[in-house]
Length: 417
Image (cartoon, rainbow, N blue to C red; front, top):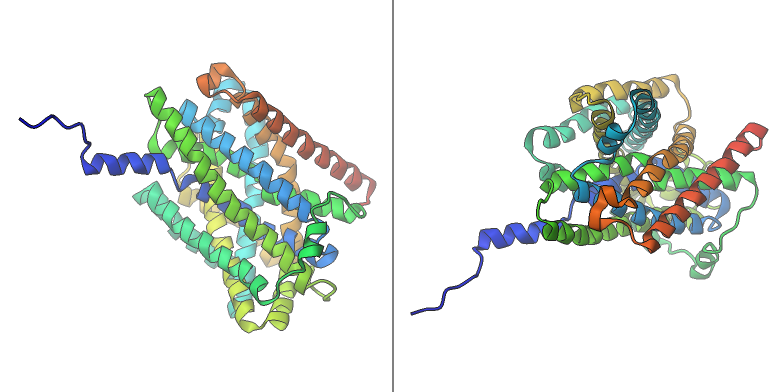
């Protein structure tokens, strides 16, 4: 008589492998790290100061890996998003004030992303910026319907494809005109050269460690599989999400650094490269029309994907803090208005993008400090409480970010920024 087998059916094995891989949520969050605000900040830094601020991107990306892992771990360990936990712990007045600042940050994010997409359509097809902003808004609504009416996985797959397009768009130029390796390595030495570099560093930091991505990732990781009642299964999922976060943020970091290196190697000293349109013209002139077109397509994919993710994040924040569920498409229409006003008023798009990233930098502590506090509490995280090393790394990151913001505030008040 044959011995009984304990082998699992293929379908169960496939589901288990899918759960353990957990690939997807971090790639959606990573879109926030390669949005048009990043393009503006990184190109401005590279074209104006060469390789000087490479270290800012490296440090910011290392912080981003830590922060996004913490956010995902919080969602998986508790079954709640960061906004939901804060909504339960804050009193009514504090909760509303907290929501207000988070909403301003989400609005600044969304504005930057719509503007970036509009600029891309202008570069590719010569469309007026206002018309381009409307098209980006409508296209993002179509993308959001994947999340609203189909499944999170369908939305994730669409975002991952767009992330691939973004990577090709911004990395391809380096193969045509590679940067000088020695000069690039000197950029790893932390230093500033005047107040303008501090302002840019804050802008780059705000564009890399994104507050709305911190809020969103805890919900994305939780929603992918729900709350695992089995402690062993929760542990496996939390371990697996490290690979998701590391892979997604590594790709985002490469794209960000590639933008700065491209600007430093091909655009340094070229007049007019302090705007995205000027940088695109310089890239086209220096590297050819094909690279210029690929660059613009990458910018378009960045605007479309990131504005969809930003809208999703805003809905997560509102739902968690105010317990108000506004349909994603309705929210998309409402949050589109500020960007269209800026585009219609003729304000320089790149300046609006850079300033929006500075605003995001001020919002980081409000998301980061509660996250670090919560993941360090045993009554919240249980056996998944942060280790001593993670706590030190988290609080060190928060201190550096808050310190840079304080310097930026002082420079702004004194009129030097």
